Each structure stands twice: as structure tokens, then as C-alpha cells.
Image (cartoon, rainbow, N blue to C red):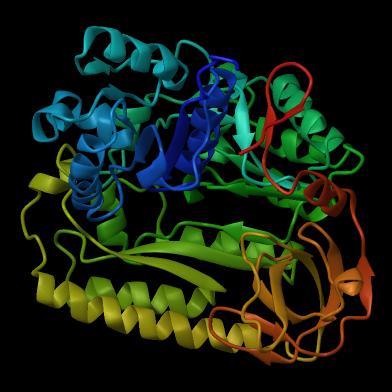
Amino acid sequence: MSNTAQPRTFEVITYGCQMNVHDSERIAGVLIEAGYRQAATADQADLVVFNTCAVRENADNRLYGNLGHLAPVKQGHPGMQIAVGGCMAQKDRQIVVDKAPWVDVVFGTNNLGSLPALLERSRVNNAAQVEILESLERFPSTLPTRRDSAYAAWVSISVGCNNTCTFCIVPALRGKETDRRPGDIQAEIRALVSVGVQEVTLLGQNVNTYGVEFGDAGAFAKLLRSCGEIDGLERVRFTSPHPAAFSDDVIAAMAETPNVMPSLHMPLQSGSDVILKAMRRSYRSEKFLGILDRVRAAMPDAAITTDVIVGFPGETEADFQATLDVVAAARFAAAFTFQYSIRPGTPAATMPDQVPAKVVTERYQRLVDLVGEISWAENSKLVGQQVEVMFAAGEGRKDGATARMSGRARDNRLVHVRVPEEAEARPRPGDIGLVEVTYAAPHHLNADAPLTDLRRTRGGDAWAATQGPTTIGLGLPKLAGK
């Protein structure tokens, strides 16, 4: 009988934005390359990694609550390790170990690839290891990546941010903007397409300033157009742009490149010019609405979404009304709405005139009601129309009783589609169908007419072949079992 030890198992728990989700794919890829394998649940894992956020509200409470839950689990699981990485680790460093001394490793946003070595060092020394690099040693896309989807992928084009928004701590945690070379991005996308990926989302803290590091102000528009030249790439999305730097050449590239989707996430944050100035958002409401007008002139069917913060320090009722007015004029397909909360280390944290929580909550509800009303009205315009849906494993069936399966339209709206019960006629994640919208709600569409136009895709083939994620590194793609 072999004495070979069983591989150590891991689970990665992610908080935060799309950048964190993609970082977690890299963390998983690094661990798999080091010989770990995916665990069924966090409680059963030999290693639990928390990839943390320092931006979202209550991020600290969620982390320390989960760490507290795992403390007795670790006591009953000899050899178990816990690691904390991401933005909160970058910010708090030693504080994590001081508050939760059962944590074995704390690592930052700039040294994801060091995790296996830090874990081994912690085991050998029987002591917590804290390693936080202040700048990138290499662009993280060079790391092996355990993709969560066989047919859709995140692709980083830059990391870091050169803006100084007073509510945001991201530049302090991820550093100044670092751009990848266009050829490296195109090579990664082509490698992904070669194994069945048919949708990519380009990621950056501010994608439309891409190219600043190598002096090409038009680099992002050129990158979008170059994506249109990649055979087999069906859908291209990106997030997030900044209104201050959003230019007409990007609008033209979106409109003229067939596989760049007619969806745009354009963060507003506030409709008050006074508050925008206090936020150090270098645009005003008139410019913001002008961008939306030009986008819709070039792409009449574009769905535009946004972010809005309610209750920023100094916000008056008149300021909030200005936000409601801009939201009403903008006609967003959806909005991610946030109640302002203090983020230590940001200029806004020490500003005077912090808005009372009761006032923030009341304003927030008014905004949510308006956003829901507008979203429902905008979605209702699509009833009776046909939309192209890419079915998605992550969205899943809406419910078994109605035999619906979910996916995203080209404009990124969520669509629940009635599908045949027969397995051979049912779409697979990654397949694409043309469906008629029969019902609209504020946050989704239904398509309950019979599904008659279904295209089996390479992405669907890739999903069927793997039934799980793939790991893609610098060399040939390889499958990674759970």
C-alpha cells in the first residue's frame, strides 16, 4: 500500500468586487499548482483562505465573525490552516493576527503568489506569517488561474488607481495604476478562447485610463477594437470606467465592434455637483448626462447601470434631490446603491457634517424606490421583443416548478427562460438562444414562450467537457479537478 500523503484541501471565501473574485481565481490556481485540491466545504478544508474587501460596508465584521466560527473548527482539525489576504489584509496587516491569533498567514494584494511558501513557513515555524508587499513584483495575470467558468472569464488589463476619491481607499491598497501591454492581454484572451471561453470581461479600477503608463491615451478604444478581431470571442464587457476620462473614441469602439456588448456600468456616485466636488470626482452632473446621451445616440439599445452613494458627509436634502433628479434623467437599467459609511484612512472619514444614520436610511429608501420604478419601466419596454441570451451556470434555474433556466442578454439584463424538460433539448451553460420576453420585473425578465432557437456553442461544449473550472497558466491549458 502506498504511503503517499493525501493532498491538502482548500476553500477560498471571497468578499468584494469583481477584482477580488478574479484574485480568488488566481489564489486557487496558485494553490492547485502547489498540490492542493478543492475541498467540499470550508469546515472540511485543511486550508481556508479569506480574500477580503476594505471597501464594502461591514467587511470587518463579516471577516472576524467567520474567523471566530472557524476557531473551534481548527481546534478539532489538526493541521488546519487559515490565511487572510486581500484589501483588508493589506490595510490592517498585524491587526488581523492580533484580533485572531489562530490565523496562520496574512498576505497582501501584491503577493498572491507567495501564499504556498508562507503556509509552509508557518507550518515549519509554528508561527503566524505576515507578508505585505507595497508594490507589484509581477503582474498577477502571470499567475496560474483556476477559472470558475469554462465559457466566461475575467481578464485584468490594469491594477491600481491614480484617482483620489475621498471616500475610497483602493489607491492606498492596490497602488498606482499599472497597465499590461496590449499584446499580453490579447494573448491571454486568445488562449482562453482556444479552450472554449466565449465571453470576457476586461477588468481595471479605471479601465478607460488604460494606457496611461505607456503613454497612449487611445489604448482602451484600440483594445476594444482588437477584441473584435478574435475569432470565437462572442461577447466582450468591461468594468469599471470613470466618467472623467470616458471619451468618444471608446463610445465609437463599442458601437462599431460587434462583439463588444451594448452594456455600460458608469458610476455616478452623486448627482450633486457640490458633493461630487467634495468626493473629488472630477466631473459634474451635466458632463455625466452628456456621456449617457452620446452612448445612447451611438447605441440606442444600450443598458446603462451605475453606483450611487447616499449620505456622503455634508449632503443636504437639496444635494440628495439633485441625485434623484439625475437618476430620473439617466433612466438607468439598474443601480447599485450604497449608504455611506466611514472608511478609516480615507479623507471623507474625518470630514465634518457626517449625515445622521436615520437620515441616510430614509434617503436611501427613497432612492431605491425610484431606481426600482425606473428599472421596471425600462425592462417593460422589452416585453414582446426578442433578446439573445447566453445561459449561465452561475445564474442557475429560477425554479424547478416553472422549468426556467437563467442567463444574460447582450445588454447584461438577467433573463429567466422557460426551457424544455428533455435533457437533450435543454440548453447548457454557455449555449446561446434567441427568446421572446413575456414579462418584466425591476431586476429581471422572463421568457416563457417555447424556446425554439437554440445554438450549441463551443462554450457549452467546454462546460459539458469539464463540468467544473479550468486552470490556465502561462503554458498549455490544463484541467484541474475539484
